[in-house]
Length: 139
Ligand SMILES: [Zn+2]
Image 1: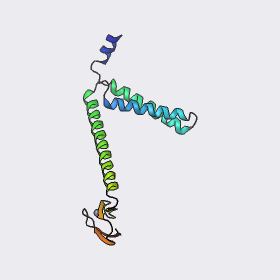
Image 2 (image 1 turned 45 degrees about the vertical axis):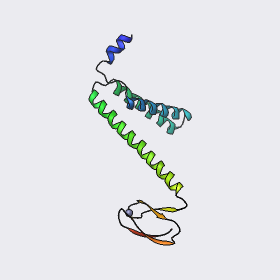
Image 3 (image 1 turned 135 degrees about the vertical axis):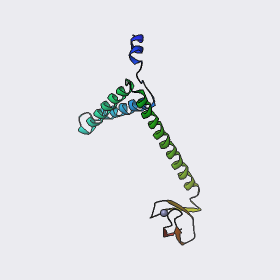
Image 4 (image 1 turned 90 degrees about the vertical axis):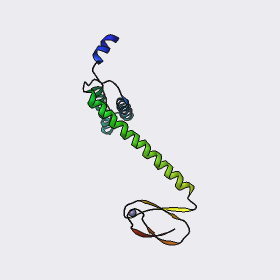
């Protein structure tokens, strides 16, 4: 049986990180769909879960390994970027919290860049360091 399986899998792609993510997403969708069995909204999740599962199997048994490898590489890159973005957002939130008594943060109306200004200077004209839009705020 094991040998048969091995022979079947030779030349096929197999599981990777993307496969694991897909099966997890499929599982989540199917669990969500079970929460409200009779509503069409939850049935929708069920079919998404099934579609994901089929897609995951298709990838695992695929013989086009270079294409699958490339998909996985893109997925890892996206995941890495999402994690890095989350970390930098958390760091910024921490910094803002630590400086809440000495500085205020405003969003530039021109380019929505966050601008930091010292607190307690009254009404000031802020010039955005990125796009040089000027706007007046109470610090
Ligand atoms: Zn700006």
